[in-house]
Length: 183
Image 1 (cartoon, rainbow, N blue to C red):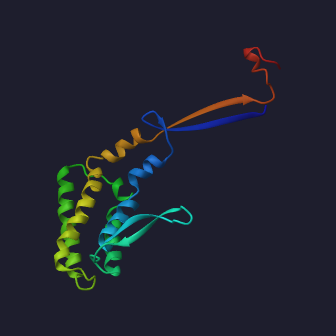
Image 2: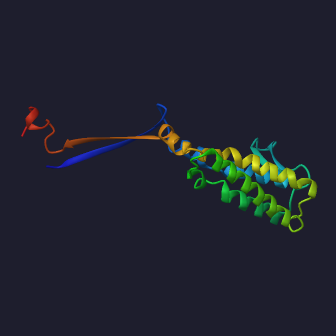
Image 3: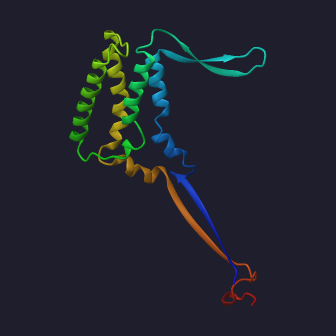
């Protein structure tokens, strides 16, 4: 008997067909890090149109003095990306107090690291608090997902996989004998 098994997978989010991109959107921190990099480098994205070709393109342009030099910007982004990533958001704090304690400790660690590096990273003293506050305001909403395991629990509603299988007998196109098919 030659059997063929067909399997199909349906991924849905709240009843709508989607790909795994819904989960990627929730966990991908790339755009947040890019926005932080633009803040630190004092650049913004401007949209231009090429008059000859009609092509529309984006270009990153400066709008002021950078908040740090390139070494400082890359070190700050490394620190932030070690905290703001898909693996970290998989953690779990059972109590809200654990979250509060972590945020306080994190704020101190970041503030101290930046203070020690003010000269090397060419951070102006008047920008110091702005940078630390901007980073903390970026991290806190992301890290709240760890409280009471709510992020993991929400995956069930965000991404649901249903598997179906259909078995057909290629040698007996008329169906199985039990149901009146041909032998």
